[in-house]
Image 1 (tube, rainbow, N blue to C red):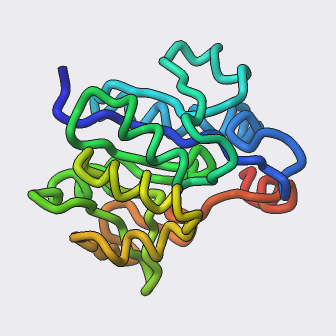
Image 2: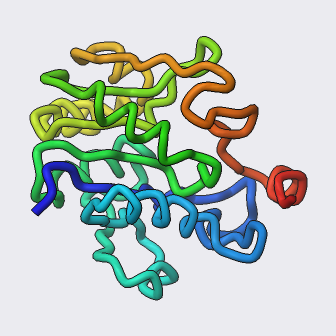
Length: 190
């Protein structure tokens, strides 16, 4: 068993896209497949957090949100509850341009922190991060309090922030972008 589980969050409502984002086709394949491909290259065990049956075709375990309608915070709580490893590389299904090099650097920087997250051009990306199981109860408490701002929760945790810059680790202008609308999907389809 690997020391890190690769978790793909694919449970969003996709209200701006109009249909399930992870299944949206980008350059001939579903967006989630790009994340799966990178996780497979890392040799990670993969789980998908989603309430949609459309992800069964990818062949990985799918877990519904334990507490529905709580957004990414609920997805992370579910991931930390269902995972069998202490460390969990959590990535949103709508980030198809993440590179293997970025995730390798993130993993190499993960030590004893509660979370390790990427930062690019001054912006932290908590949905490109490694979460220790030991923060599961923090996420449950925040859900119980209905405090669902992921960045606010992360700011309260012991975090290692890993900075990335343009041109290093395969980073380009799109690497950390997520795709939320059909317009964005169409403009990124190269």
